[in-house]
Image (cartoon, rainbow, N blue to C red; front, side, top):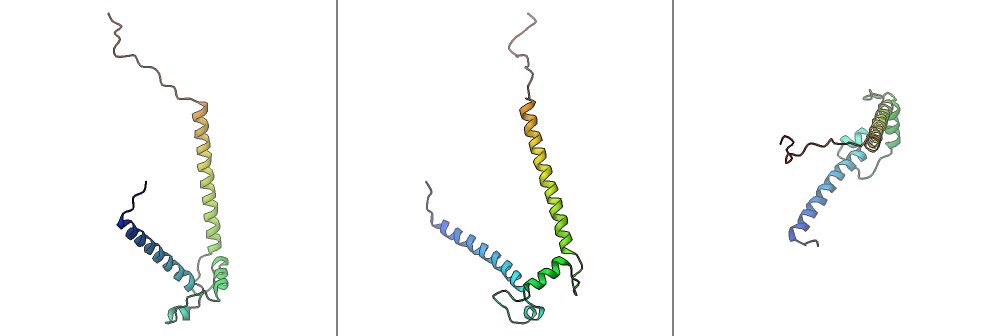
Length: 121
């Protein structure tokens, strides 16, 4: 049975407030990335996404050279995908191999002589 204590409500409110503040900062960063530099730097803070979202995404992923673009993000994402897939496949293989080893090769512990029996009487 779950007890209802008065501070549980306070703790829940604090947790929700923290989660909302983290989400708000991420949403603001995502919204700011869809606007042009003049809107972001100026005092006009938009609450919804701008019209430059697709243009900026394509420029970042396809490495169309811009003023600040230096790294090919598409190639970096592909390298990360290949590395993560290889690591995951290796972990799965090792797990299957160890499960097979446990089933096929049982671990038998040799019996030790009992300390209570004396064989030198």
